[in-house]
Length: 137
Image (cartoon, rainbow, N blue to C red):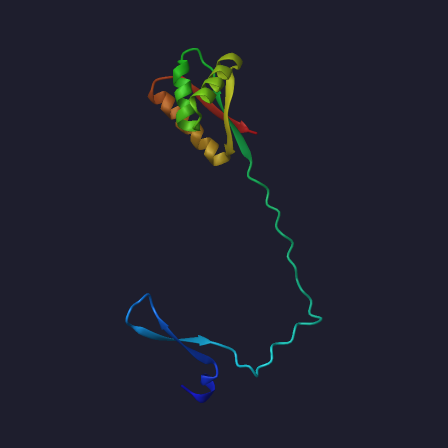
């Protein structure tokens, strides 16, 4: 080690977690006689305006009424794909039955598309004509 480097390093004696190995660590320290850098007085500071990012558009997922799909199957769909409890799923199913359609949830576009495809595919797989659609909220 050079003589000038000796001022910058301070030895620390350490022992790790009860191991018998003893290790010397060196940490970088500043010498006491070096002045700190002067502040930048009179220098222009460029500030960036925070970017305003609009939230992604939201889409409402609806289940449409038909005359052939059993009410229990609609409740199953709402529980399975929209994570509703039985009581909430029954309320939405009755809204679908009375008003012709019911809101399943509001999601970003990609999530809404995925849920619509899952519900439509699941109902076709079980040979029901149930339709699920989405529209911008």
